[in-house]
Image (cartoon, rainbow, N blue to C red; front, side, top):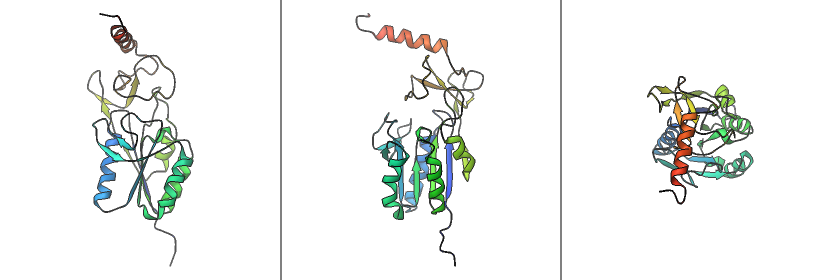
Length: 208
C-alpha cells in the first residue's frame, strides 16, 4: 500500500470587491468546523480594515485568522501545527507574493483542503498577483459578481474612485465601487473624483 496521503483540493473564490468573497470563505470555514474539521486561516497584514485577528466581510461576518506579513511568515505559522490541520483558508490572497502558489501545491500534496479568496483583477482590469495562476491549478473556481453601483446590473469590475494610480490602496466603501462593463472606467472616474473633492472641501476645517 502507498504511504502517500490522498491529495487534497484547492478551491479559489474570486470576483470584484463587494461580491461576497470573504463571506463565502467564512461560510466554508464555518461549515468545516461544524463538521469537526480542524481549520487554520490566514490573512495578509496589509488588510487591517475591519479586524486585526480575523477575516471580515463587508456584511460584518468574521472568522478568526492569523495575520502574516508574507508567504514565508505564513509557512512559519502554519507548519508547526500542520499535522493537526485539515482545512487551510487564506483571504485577500492577491496581496501575497508568488510563493503562495508552490505553498498551495505542497498543501494539496499533503492532503489538505485549501480555500483561497481574492480579487482576480486590479482596478485597471489587469490580472492581480498570484490569483490567476491559482485559478489555473485549482480544483474549483467560484467567480462571484457584485451589483453595479451605477445601474444595478451584474458587476465584474472594481472601480477605484479618484485618480490614484498606485496598485494597492486598501479601502472599501468610499474608495471603491463595483461596476459592470458598461460603467467601468479603469483609470479615471471624473464624476466620482469630483464628488470626493467636493466632500473633502465641505469637511475641511473652517467650512460652514
